[in-house]
Image (tube, rainbow, N blue to C red; front, top):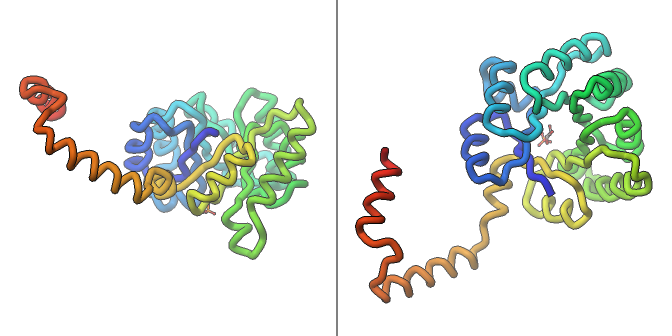
Length: 232
Ligand code: E4P
């Protein structure tokens, strides 16, 4: 499963990109507003940090303007995935941009029927919002299962299921068990995935026992060279 981070915060993207675990980034107008600054510069900077797909969303609602915006966004870098809403104009724009060789992420998907339409429009990614469905008393993960079941019947569908609006690590695990291609998650969820109290407790014990041996793996010269490298 590919991991995308769902943020426009450059510091958080940089920190996570350095782990080598980030396969892409998703942004939306709300995340861009939170980050502040120029949208176009922000996307260019994210594209320099992460080589995988970086979703940048159009803000027009009519086809002609969406298309112009999408083409402009796609010119920023080859790894831009233009994000369009799941509306008739959005899908029309998706079809045109896909035919032009641009990656398209169809967002705001809340039903299997919508996901089917996005696949027919040639979307690179479909983004079903599991958290927002859970928020209204629906079961977001059931939608992921439905979309995957439908897509799996048609091997010619190349659209990848990008599980969005993820609120916790358990949703990432559930999505992976279903075979979803990608999960996009806020940085806090990536950090939560790492943590387990038994890992922390186990490490504490190992290190305490290692101290008792009085040994070091790196000798003093090697440790000094490492510290000099870190500080230089
Ligand atoms: C990603 O592409 C979506 O914009 C994002 O996951 C939405 O998440 P939210 O429901 O937490 O705002």
